[in-house]
Amino acid sequence: MYSSLLTLPTTDEYKDLYLDEYNAKQIFTFDNIKVQFPKGKFFHLFKESSTRSKERHKDQWSWTRLQRILWIKKALQDNSADLYEGWDDDKAAYTKERRVCRVDSNYVVVIRLVSATESQILTAYLVDTDRTLEIIKNSPTWTMPDKFKE
Image (spheres, one colour):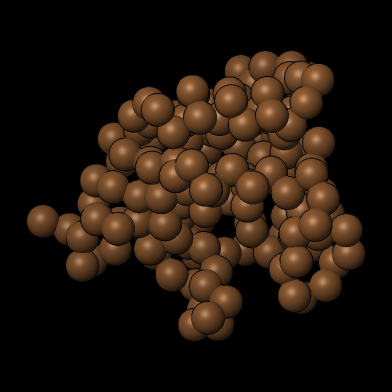
């Protein structure tokens, strides 16, 4: 289901693709939640820290993330994906307002719900350690937050 890696010559070309494919279009999850992709989110989505520090300082491009740019939409629309509650560092707790979508290739897309039908992209990445994968798999299963149920 997931395409081969996309290799473009420059980060500017990946940014143009992001703006054309995500920012300029309406993207929906398989269960009809609209996902917004703000222009300014490109750098956050596709950069990473050169160190594994807690400071979250993203100082270099992630070619692993950039080459999987087209996987984001596919993962969001994959109805066989595993869905988990996301971790909120500020609250130091899992929250149903963050939805982690994990597909078989251990690719993860995280969105933040703002209503039952709208959300924003938070991050997308290939899980690269067994520890991270186990943490995700042991997270609570995601269900729609009560405050968004009609």
